[in-house]
Amino acid sequence: MVARQRAAASLQVLSILSVLLTCSLCCFGKVSARALLADGASSNMTELQKHVSFFDRNKDGIITPLETFQGFVAVGCEIAFSSAAASTVHGALAPFTNPPGTLPPYVNIHVKYIHRAIHGSDTGAYDSKGSIRFVQEKFDEIFKKHAHIKLDALTLPEVEEMLIFNRDFLDPASWPAAEAEWQLIYQLAHDRYGFLTKKRARGIYDGTIFVELEERRKSLHSDT
Image (cartoon, rainbow, N blue to C red; front, top):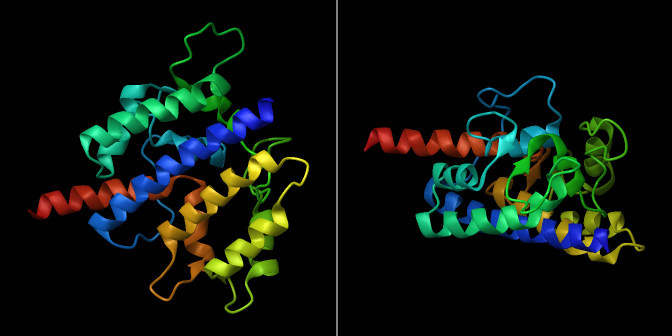
């Protein structure tokens, strides 16, 4: 039951992020996922914690609905969408990420416990059993096994092949979340030739793409 709830929650959030990135890309064009250091990001944070810490606007380890709203606005989304997205994200993730003993209502997302929202059927690039670190070897395997046309890059069919390969057949409820996640990654980072390069995909895992989206938005506003 918990696994199904976690998968459903992940799917909800990833669907929202897909829309977010669609509207952002329409405004800013294709985004390079180069390694940018998020302001205030601690060197001892896991990659998964960095992935969500962009929305922790005051860097206190707790993401409030207001901060999530501000994060969506910062990357270029409209007010109404940002409000709805913040509500849905917190409704889906807050129950999983609150510290032990926390009483309802579960409103805030705690960065320290974001690993509890990891779903099954993933690539294993986030180590969910030990240190919750980024596993470079698992990330490299994605391209070694599934990049057939171009070294260190994936086409959309190759992404689909990878998803099928990684499916946990004992946990089918996790399949949609993995599908939504990688469609998001491909949509965000593929180049004009339809390739998702290894360099661009890597930038998704630590959340630096959100920093770049915000910087591009600031740059566009400063030029007008």
